[in-house]
Length: 309
Image (cartoon, rainbow, N blue to C red; front, top):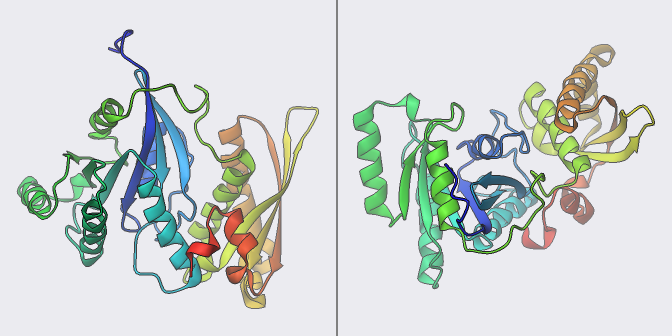
């Protein structure tokens, strides 16, 4: 039961971890709506998307960072820089790891990064969330918890299943209690600080990522060019899918346009559910050979090319 006399609290929580650790799934579970794309492909969260959750008198603003990994391309470097920047801006950091994968080289590298920052005087609390606990036996889980807490001084450890919701309420309550006292940062009914047109573009990109294979999903981006409110209450949305090569356009369109049609139908349904209104979605595919090196394209997806080096 919520305490009516509890002080208002508000602050930022950064979710960090390797790609595919379940950060986007946890964010969507915490917020209670789909604000971050979730796929089985790694590196799908490009921008630091903020989702807003309420727990009692506390407003928790989640920063869903791109997965931390060893960058190869310019886009990779911008994504990793965005992840660490999101952690630096937060009041509390939550490191998510997958129970069945344990202490991987990637997790070890993240822990080293956290140690460097704590050594520089960063005293913000870091919680450990071991995700996908249903994939391992209890003794394995307990041994992993002990090993990780010996490796780094976590403020608290949570065993969760972001997909099924196990342990998520306990984590959210702990985060709410740990935020600084102060007025809420967003209106009560706002669940994300990205404009609807950008969330709609992310939803379409998710459908593209799920449908396509190999490297292509990482060489395309989606932009909402037009968002037109109609008198009947529906919305017309025009989006452009930019790809890097002519060959990619053919893959995306598919035989007789079947692939892009299927993607459009799936994206339209999800966007309509998100905004609560009928949607007319029109997709165009354009070849833009150098988009991966264009500053404007990075800004459009919430990244700073200046951080990419």
